[in-house]
Image (tube, rainbow, N blue to C red; front, top):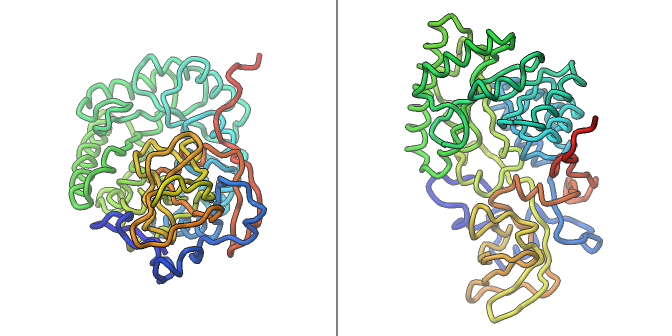
Amino acid sequence: MIAAYASEPLSERRIESLNNEDATTAMSRHPYEVGGTESILTPALLIYRDFVLSNIDTTIRLLNGNPDRWRPHVKTAKLGYVMEMLTARGVTAFKCATSLELLTAIRAGAKDMLVAYPVMGANALRIREIAAENPQVAISVLVESARQLENWVGTTIGIFIDINPGMDRTGIEQGRAADIVGLAKLISKSGLEFRGLHYYDGQLGAVPLPQRERQAHAGYDRLMQVIATLQAENIPVKEVITAGTPAFPFTLSYPEFRKPAFIHRASPGTVVYCDATAAEQLPEEFGYIPAALVLSRVVSRPASGVITSDAGHKTLSVDCGVPNCLVAGMSYLEPLRPSEEHLPFRVAQKERSPELGDLLYLIPRHVCPTVNNFDWALIVSQGNIVAVEQVSARGREKPLLQH
């Protein structure tokens, strides 16, 4: 399988090691090969059910077998089909960013949802509507100011305070403990439930593994100081949410999270599909497997040593830069800069160049927006297409509230 490498980028590893074959014999033979490709319109999103289940089980195992310690972000999963795979394994607490993701997760059996995004205006009104229509689900939101708190007064929606651990995207800087305490007090005075703290240290993704652990633990030390300050003010902290995929190993190893006085949940979402970037960021021994690929066809050979496939940036996200993918079984193909519908590759010298019509199995570097590019996904098991499922949380709801 493709594993993660702490010391060497995955792109520099031999992808052919998936089946221990050399580049020539691995041209179309690897664990991702699918039958019946003559009927598949490309580019197509392939989701490998068995690998997804393996990644789900791996995450639960790492969390000491307790699925309730996991609050994955469904912006990655995107399919109600995959969310149902999670709830069937006992994972019922999730994070989301949009009202459509919230609805999709609820329909899949979610019991506890955090809208992990600073929704304002009509977006907040829509979350209020969904909460009122689904009283069986514990729905919470993030706040970082009194202005945001006003959106939720008079509802049963729970409140998490968003902490900025240095990513500088949202939240209150964790050094501002007095402001965090003041906001927690205001939550209670407003008649709302203060559920806890949300801490997403996604900025650590680019930090090498050993330094990442030190920086993550130093951040958690500061977070524990914030918790102690709240407790000293007789403000109970019920839940603390930490770590997306890059910091996941270190939220597992942090001693204070092993038997805390609060519910601690980790929130990696990318691990469900494990893209090429996540595979590089996570320890090899975890055993995660890339489980969502794009099937593409070679449509041109525009120059010597260059081929072009039909998977441009409207298919494979390029927000991670170039190269934006790896090619399973063909690591000698170097992805070049894509355009809207085209993705060219440079073929390494002395390697056999794919022919027109040949299939490429592309492993995205950022799977979340890649999945969001597709309306439908082909579900694969044991090399066969077993279902065609809608990417049901793709995009957003209609942009007008219904009155």
